[in-house]
Length: 534
Image: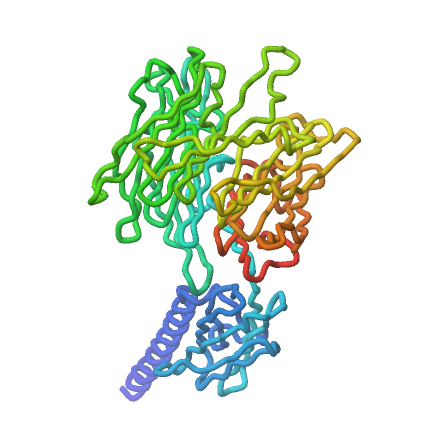
């Protein structure tokens, strides 16, 4: 009996030991599994190899000059300290939190990165490198994997909003694939950090649009966005085009009105050009297949801004199909491009073009005020009215020249006190040697092909040199001052036709990297020395 009692006690003790071991094992596994599922397990860790017991830093991977970064410290044993090797930052603890810090970077910082070091009460450390950004890079492909390409003309920019047109699908018509335009991305730019965020996807009001060159034009102010689709096809048949008008309501673009041509059988490209200022909007319908001339339709918002109504129409002779291919409204004046082609086969396209300037004091009855004959000013150029910009009593025109050499001009006109516009200066690039541009790039290889102007800054992209030039224009001296020269390579801008847009604060550059769109945003207050995609 004594032996049996001893055996029972030993079995009991052994059972307790086994149970203890099993319990300890599951507790250890539970802790291990808890660590593996820790949402902070993928952030930077200290290099001391202490795993779950170590210190971690949780924050964004970048900071912009003049901005604040919130940093949280986890693991180890508090309290924590956060330090840096940079003299350009200020670190302070966030009130009410025992593990959160505020990191403020000086707006004048020239550093490329800063290093943060967190230390706990046991002297365990974690280190994290934070990049300093002066250019924002947005990979639209990551936000929508169906995005194929940003079209070069599908871009609008104000101080507060960015609008980007993208191709998102292909449409098969008669065994031919055509890109289908059905998405407009819009972004808002925050005032403090110059960050684009709050993506809004807009499906076009008509989604069965077959694309060709310049299929969709955009113009915007702070409250109204207009989208023109001049080369639309509906059910395989060509349409005269349409214009969709959207209004900004509670930070969201909402459909407002759809405008179409009153004469669809003329096949005029209604919506090929757009202009917007205040309560007035102009729509260009360049001449179409039936050898009709171009027309310009002028609209006005009614008194309560609930509707757009057509109030007047301007038209040209049948020989001027390009009438209205570029439009601008500025200070009660309407600028309308013209081009009279010569009848000689060898001279077609060589006319430098004209600009009609109309007085809009009575928008229901526009009066021709002045005609600018650009042939008198652009010695090197073939055609000057594809694009022009009007701001702050200055008119800037790009005049691409010989595509074989890349020569060209950018002309500057100034408004006089009597309302007339006078030529004052120009930028000229003259090249004697033929360029090595590919056929796809030759159409934009000439100086003056791609440029933007916001009233004080001028940006011009010169394909021959793969360089973006930033100039300041002094309205008193009527002169161009070179501010920055940005060489670009295939990693920065892989396409030969980047989109450029200027607001008063930013330069926006978009393009396509292996048919995946990208966006670069540059702060004009403190332009960087070089353009880099982060």
